[in-house]
Amino acid sequence: MIILGVDPGLASTGWAVLEKTSQNRLVDYGCVKTAAGLDFSNRLGHLFQAMEDLIKQFSPEVMAVEELFFAQNVKTAIKVAQAQGVIKLAGAQSGLKVVEYTPLNIKMSITGYGRGDKRQIEFMVKKLLNLEKEIRPSHAADAAAVALTHIFTNQNLK
Image (tube, rainbow, N blue to C red):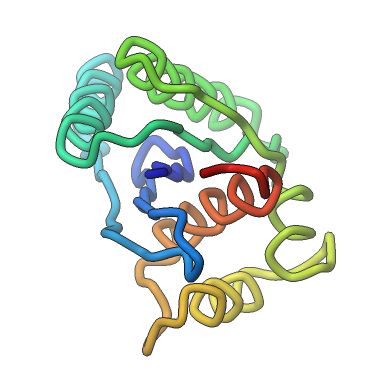
């Protein structure tokens, strides 16, 4: 099974493709960036197209997305929520099963502790995927953590 993990954002959306095997193999990862100077609708369109391209390239069966964590800046949260909606729409229109995990679910699944910080997540992703170095940028490492959470939460996946 191929899983596309996504850490949604408007400026930078992390993604990671994992193959569920006995060792859970990292296939590829990266970030989709949108320029702050672009019209908001164009940024969403770029994000949607990038997600469609990733889905076509890697043919995942599942898209695992981190749920939005509402910060104090409501205006930013609304824009990120719209980006998240576009990401999920790309997955749904491509026929993928789209699932969401809260930051707490992800931290518990990856570190065993619900208040794990970014450094702990990055370290554990490296360890769990048997990588020589940590995934950079951190948004891509977060996306890998989301995909791993899906695997760990659904142990009976084939």
